[in-house]
Amino acid sequence: RRFDAFVSLWYTFGGGTRLNVGSDVRPTLTVLPPSREELQKGTATLVCLADKGFPSDWSLAWKVDGSSSSWEESRSPGVLGGGALYSWSSTLRLPADQWAKVGSVTCEATQGSQTALSETLRRDQCSQ
Image 1 (cartoon, one colour):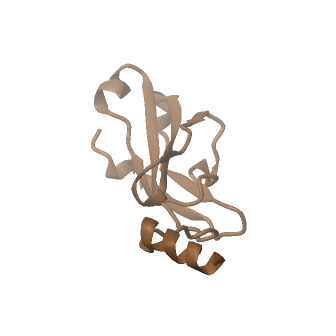
Image 2 (image 1 turned 135 degrees about the vertical axis):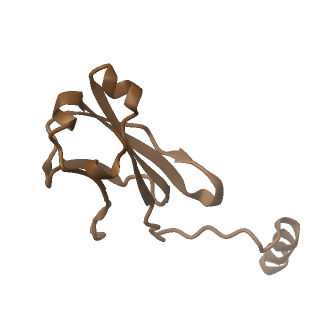
């Protein structure tokens, strides 16, 4: 009888929904440069977007010219999107005069024992 109940539930709810537990998905990283208007006001804010990753506990960290950043950083909580994947962001703020001396910034994503994932923005690639 239990098997009959299982079959009945399967037909009721369908077999098309699957939950994959333990399937890590590496997010796509994008680093957005500061705006010209913001730089004119004396601040440089860079944003690292991490899109479509799983699970939600990926850590984002910044490196400036290859070294860990000492400037202000903040991170948004993960937002669950389509396909049961998460998106989140990290923000790096530094004075505009310091940004003018920077060669590159890197956003690095890590999770558990996974190999780190990174995206680098060179300042000379940005229109000033």
